[in-house]
Image (cartoon, rainbow, N blue to C red; front, side, top):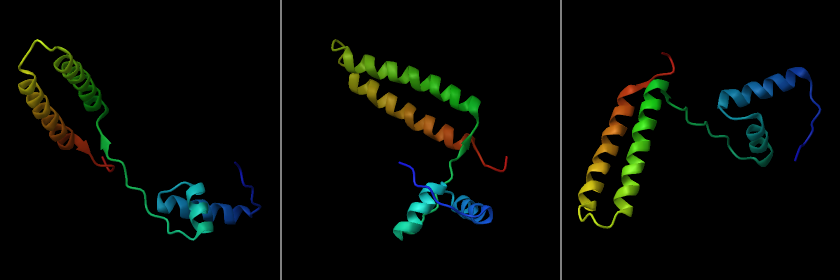
Length: 106
């Protein structure tokens, strides 16, 4: 639902600037002002190299296939060992991602 409000161009620009400074949308900013709720700054998303994300997605896809196989195939008694290995790979992938994160300034 829409709510319309008349304002001067300067007021509008100032309000949008305040919302941007808080890292929230204008709608969130207006709702918080009207409801009397303090606006919290949104956490900044971390930048990650897109090539690394593509590679991680491919590895993750393969891991998902392995996990489905381990959960589906009842004739292998070694499913616990497979799951332990998958969990180790998951931890290593998380470490790899954190190592390759780039800052916003880069």
